[in-house]
Length: 174
Ligand code: S3P
Image (cartoon, rainbow, N blue to C red; front, side):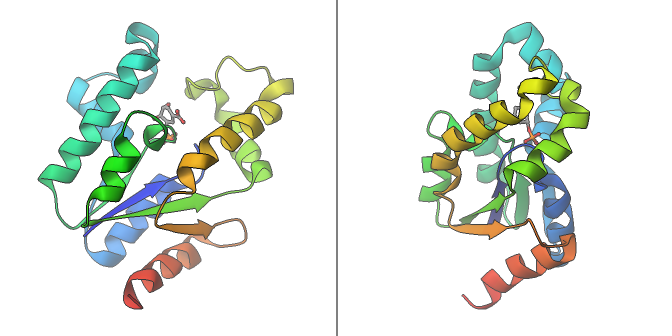
């Protein structure tokens, strides 16, 4: 089985993914990390030097490469991965793949993302006074894609352990 975690930046995909992989005794792969290793460049520099369209192309290719070459793996996507090209359709069409949307509230996302704004190419140019409005609009646009995931976990009032327990339960009752 391939478990794919998706959701906005700062929704906890990597943290939850690592813990979940330990629990399942699966391999864990963070897509951004995979891309950085493969292309020997930081995501920030890919955006800066090659542009977002190029990044979207390689992230789509990398997701497919990972899914074709692995079984029993948890993958944390990038926040934008399911929103471009045919990546989400590809993931939804593969019977071995289970997609899970980690849904965090706007307030929590703003709280988590504001201090690390400069590390994130998508929001690094947004002024502090506009960050909440930007995320609200962006999240609204992306929710159309995130909402298509097989499962959705509202993470707002849950601890890391509780989130992992919920995900484990999804597969136990199946
Ligand atoms: C992006 C999210 C980032 C990374 C890139 C673009 C996005 O991943 O892929 O900076 O478009 O939301 P995380 O969600 O892991 O931060």
